[in-house]
Image (cartoon, rainbow, N blue to C red; front, side):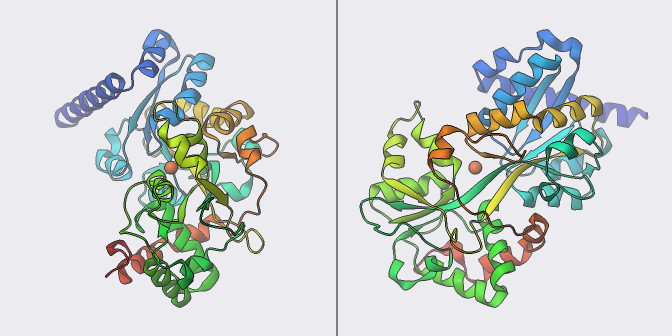
Length: 361
Ligand SMILES: [Fe+2]
């Protein structure tokens, strides 16, 4: 290793440790529980688009089982670019994402490597993993419509209907460029074609109550406050609101809405995934593989189901009682690769109709 490379490595590791320290300082009790008293088992570095509190219970269970300490760097964006920029010196072992788009983007950017694991192949059905082994789904979530209990009588809806003028000024949704909406619009493009999807997106924009902004929960709050009658959001947010002791006002937001699974009488509700990829230059490859296998296991899938109220990808793992209470639904069976392939076109449509400018433009 050259002196320059060595200095770069030292600097990168210092920055990583610093960022990790800041994260640990900010994350309170989890940090204490994952203190390195089990360092004998090694460590694994996770770059995560998933929020730390969602993965903390899984990592704690993994650490307890294996003695491998899991370090997490969380960011809302830029992690894939960061791994690419870090190159050979990247400390990243595992990438955790909130959508299929990020997984395929990471593979395309060349920051992932193929994984061949009998255990993972047995645990995760083929339709939820990359045939080349560069990414694997861990959980599924529906993108549903939250409707006002007080003001919306109907108990069924389609995505297409969101563009119906009868909803003029009544719909709240986050930015069209957010990965959750890009995936939904990409799936619409697969089903309807680009021209019809553009019309649909324009119709939906015309029906917005306000400029897109905020997260999924902010849209549901909009229904609660009377600003809109319908909000688009992922399924697990219902549980996060209903069980929110830190912000109990969110329980009221949740109580004001009913969850409608769009198109469940037809092609099915759009479902996206969270997932994982092994980083191309993972310095702790064996530990990362062990974690990947663990995350696909019954135990981890059950934690995802019970703690995060997502739908497991492993067959036979039961849904949480709360998720079960939302009822069964038909999931859109479109291949995840198709959705990922249409993302660029979907994103272009968002710009073309100036979706994020809101209803008045
Ligand atoms: Fe989310």
